[in-house]
Image (cartoon, rainbow, N blue to C red; front, side, top):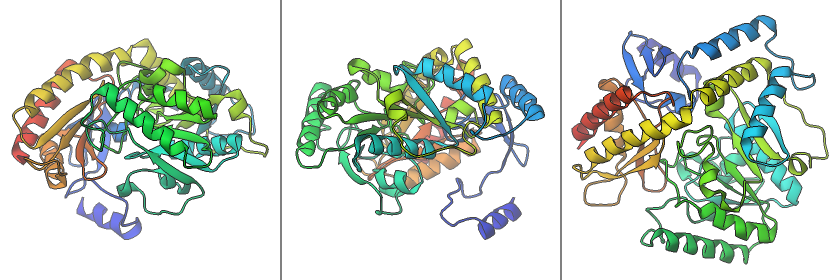
Length: 427
């Protein structure tokens, strides 16, 4: 393994982060488990950063990929593509957006990049509203709107970005308010901000902030924002790269917790839909999607093999009600983790919904981030046979737990027990 690590460091960027003091090579997986190069098995509670959504080596996906690869792998968007049309039809129907059009990309970054292009072209404005503590990708434009310093290496941007309060319920100047007061204060802040700037193109927001540590506002915040945005003609972009496809359990899309004032104008997606294949995309009303007045194609977006995989994966997810499973098993997992956290002064909060759970760590007796504890828990969980993620924004550190949506009750109990031991060992 050291040889592979040395080779990695010799040819790949220094900023390409690796988990663990002794980095892990994952060689294969099945169900909710993966194996490393030494043959050790782990329960996977991070799924390749929320990407293995249904299961590792899901037979339906493996079969669809194999059969499609034997026919044709790729031809580009310059030709009619049956799997792409079929998947677009399913997604448009599930989107909740009237007269929806779908454009496929290869990643969430590229999906958000496209959404920003559409919104700024449609509105003829390069001003964008984004949430503090947000993350939207690693391209030039998406780094420019990311409200999380740890993931934003440049302040240069083609966009003027203004950051709004509300993505983090338990921190910031409004944290002391009750939910209704919190929403009202955030709406007042948005109204005030709009009085000081040129008309923005759009607000882009993750219903649950992923990299930021699985934080979220009270349900209904973005519906209240939408009422204000509509008055000004400002578009709402819901970044569903991590929250889409039923992961939150209560809803198929994260925005539906904020759906009182109607669906977003644009939805972006990626990660879980491909179950590991490189699939992203944008859903928008036809008038917005069709607003570009220059040619645009995608060489690899919508390629046949990834579309076949995503279609098989989506069919499996819907037919087996994995959203319902995420709600039931995720609820159990959050309960178990909250019971453990109650006796640990270093755990500030256990939050989340469905199978998207954050455990925020802080130095005991303070609200200060404890990144050393987060790293220690990550290592101890691995030692116990469990893989989890981490994240956080301004002065926060959080563990990120997002297993495949087919997680069983027994696996949830097993993972909670391993994580409980890891948290106790770190504190």
